Amino acid sequence: MAISYTQSISSMEAIPNSGSYNNIIYKINYHIEGNSGSFSDTATNDVTLDISDINDEYNFINYENTPEFEETVFTWITGSVNSSKASISSSINSQLEFSNNGETLTFSY
Image (cartoon, rainbow, N blue to C red; front, side, top):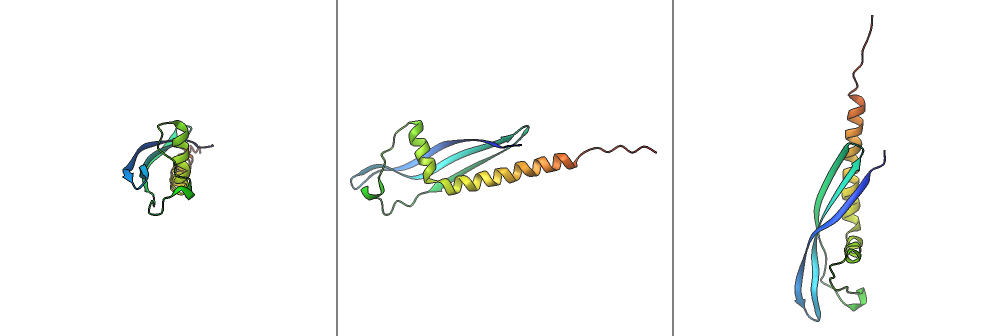
């Protein structure tokens, strides 16, 4: 069975002002849920971003409360998100394997 994932940003923490920049996001908290039939697992995690060398060269993006901005934020934390998905996948596959091995066998003589 395929695993479908639902992900969302739970919260973001920002520095209000730093130099000529405002609302610099430095911490992202996210939640992911994976489902495959009746099997599921979730992961909640946070990622701290390195903002020590922020400048216009790296296309600084101002915070916006929009779905497009949330998708942009997920690109910043791809490695952590992929790791969470791998953990969820492993858990669901273990649940599937256990459910298949827990069959009741009937013997007749």
